[in-house]
Image 1 (tube, each protein chain N blue to C red):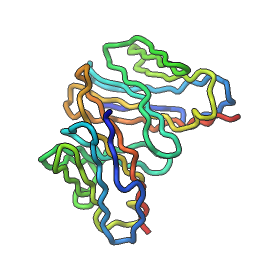
Image 2: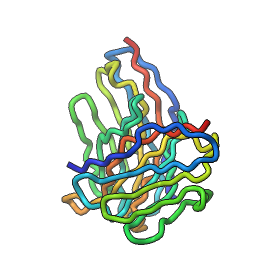
Image 3: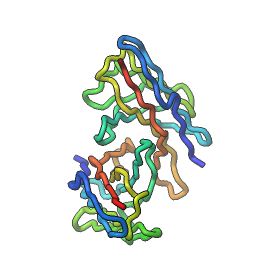
Image 4: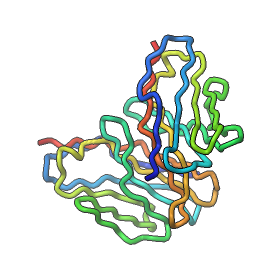
Length: 118
Length: 116
């Protein structure tokens, strides 16, 4: 159980176009989803926290107009990279939060989306 | 402020050697969770272990073992008799309980190369 999917797994786009990445919790409802960005050989950096039905909370330094996040349902969050540029090329990973049997917070991670902007 | 430090950027060992990956964390919370994840070349994070701040018992799972010491704020990970398939980047992460944000703070990762 607790599977999170991302679509697409890989996308190549031209500079100036917008790209949408979907994150779905397949077998559980996630009130909170997180979006991370990972540069090559670097750590995961949290971009934003997305709560169902409300506006996303962005981390310091993340442009909210550049990275649009929508969390319209308990199983789906989307990240749209608007007017993408080569410096937006990165590995984007989402996670979905649910509470485990022991009441602890647990995040389940998607497989990631590799974005390449030409 | 919360922080996770993985001082070892890259480690190379020969197959069958034991290797320990270090993780030191900082937090003001008394309730928190620590995690280890493996990231193979495919990029997908593989969950290895979760430990809460009230449970200092060490854990062993096959060739993997974890040593949690609150006194030194460390949560180290040992692989016994390493194998080539263990080659990956390993991340330690911290999640604080009191803040209510449930954010994970990741360390910078340790790249492990196991040579045949």
